[in-house]
Length: 129
Image (cartoon, rainbow, N blue to C red; front, side):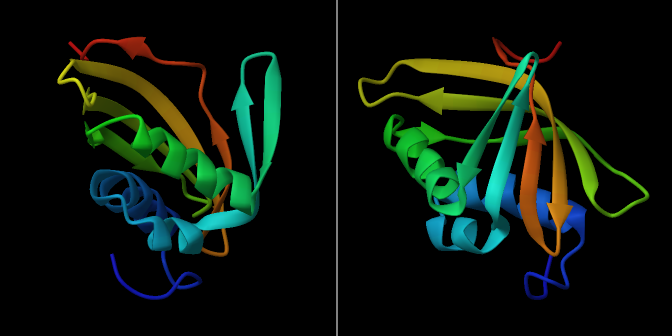
């Protein structure tokens, strides 16, 4: 996982986003990996976030937890070097010590080294079995 934003593969961008941005709270790297706008797709709706809103979403979510970690159980990169699917679980601990884990799948679209779209149909509490 090396190189500048435009030389990274889509898989490298998605792995950096999950394993470094979220796990180490590297918000400067988030600035680098997030596109000028990000479309977050859900079933029946999509939300368009500006670059600033997308980065703020990460910062605000991290602030809700004393600890948050993404574990990538599966990463599948498309042949187009734009789409990457992940299966993840995310153990978290709140400031009061409450521990929980959520799990889901997401598909990312990466253009020119930046995340531009994310498909997620929600998550459930618990770990993958």
